[in-house]
Amino acid sequence: MALTGLLALPLAAQTPPPAPVRIGLIAPLSGPSSDFGRPVLHGAQLAVHEINAAGGYLGRPVELVVHDDQGQPDAGLAASQAMVASGVLAAIGFCNTGVAVKSVGVFQQARVPLIVPCSAGAPVTRQFPPSGSYIFRNAPSDAIQAPFVVNDLIRRGWTRVAIFADKTPYGESGLRDVEAAMASHQLKPVHVERFDLGVKDLTAGLQRARQAGANVIFSYTVGPENATIALGRDALKWEVPQVGGWPLSFPYFIVGGGSAAEGALMAQSFIAEPSNERRAAFLASYSRRFQGPPAVPMAAAQSYDAMYLLTYAIFAVRSQLDGPAIKNALENLPRTYYGVVATYDRPFTPDDKEAVTSNMLVMGQVRKGKVTFAYPEDARRNLFIQRKR
Image (cartoon, rainbow, N blue to C red):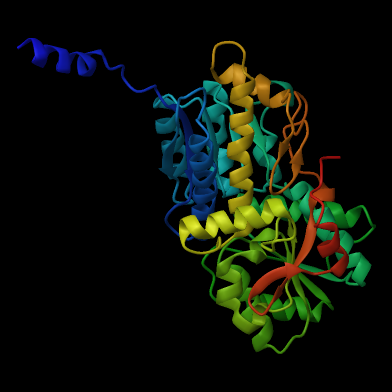
């Protein structure tokens, strides 16, 4: 009996495992936006795997609390409320502007810092005064994407622009951003076409744009509608380029548009080419863990960086680990994070919640069904990861 007692003692004296550091992740993991929602999940999961392999937070593992917003505003709001109620310390999330705009207030009210790694709509980070805002973003806002693309159009001499924008909050804000960018060059679109999600034929609108004398189509939508535009233009044998924000790098466009998608141009913060050691290592690790490259490389890379930015902030907290302390740490990161999209040296401040600036962008182009650099000089510049300006 004495021997049995001695053997049992170590088991009885065992301490429970350390409590995990719980970080929320919300994205469209099902539905029509899942093609870029799942890379957001995988990018964060890869970062968490690496962080935990290195010991986590002071021996505590990082745990992702995952919710699917389905790309639907009401579902996103319910998922956000459930996530905050579960007690996460911070969160990463949102791909669709309409979902984000309806949901970010939940995180703001609960004082739970949120980094948006995907949604580009300018209104997402503008709902609250910057100094008090808990809403951060490390995706390029359309407020910089639209002027970046417009400047490229002017460089190419494509100034007779037809804008095709869906009627979602993303299309609405994108349309305003493109019109403002054009107005800064004393230009106006020659035609504006609005449409509902799910439209299968935009031939009539394309004919109106051609009759208006457009020499380029600027599309602002996130789903198969981009391919609908490309296929309609191809059917009309109207040989004008299609340009836009980063959704033109999504499978819905590239696969759905087929040969009609070839040559399309779009703003990119990350192109899946191993142009330097950091990016090569990320792409190799992602492919090993998820049995192939990311379907939307920008979404995966930005989510990966967002997870590391949150981790750096958590390690910088020297007081009670809670939302206000993490917010303050994000605004005053003491260490530079050498990410795969950018080198993050003070990416946020109390008055600036946007980590990405226009110098980090390059023009991507669809060639042979993949996105690559539109300009050789961008490929050369991409050897050096940019810092915020």
